[in-house]
Length: 249
Image (cartoon, rainbow, N blue to C red; front, side):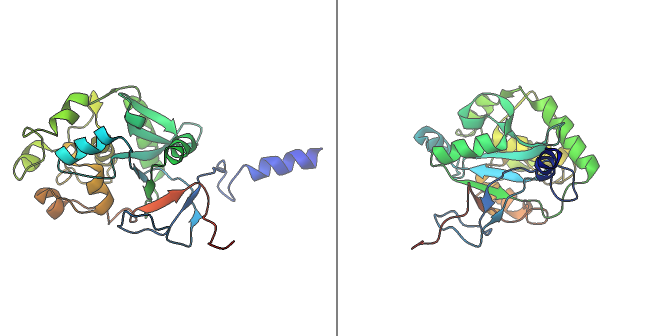
């Protein structure tokens, strides 16, 4: 009996890390391409704090709104954090078109996207966060949890009064630190600036969209010349709940 219990306990931890094993699905090979190709070989995804999550949205309203804001897919983004018990979660601004900032379970979120036939990508950290950075990220996420989604500012991005523009991005898009509300990509960028992963001098949270985060290039001139995640994050890798079965098998 003891041996059986012991084996279960051992199987719930990663080797040498003392952390609970987490079924994070798999990642295809990374590429700056948004298509249906599943680039192998796939590898198991072990979520780590600081990874950036991106997804599409099937809503025609959301897609139309992004086009009006001079952007496109992906339509949503978030960042991986650790809960106090060490389990990974997602900090998101308005998950599934909600109007709250939330810390949500990764597996439940990804599975729901899969059920809705929406695509998910991960930009994994090249270098893991330090213990201090991860703790700062957790504390920051807890303070944002439950705040409101920045609906009005998001709607303003579809008008001539948006913060994206040759001069407006440089002047108006600068980091604001902790706010009372955010839209999704803004929250990701403010988070990265807060824990020192991105420069406050060149990052423009309120003028950055998920499409910019995905491609490391932008239709916005300022971002195209000053913004990139390539130094700290891998290119986007398509997430799948399990490795695809080769044709004919």
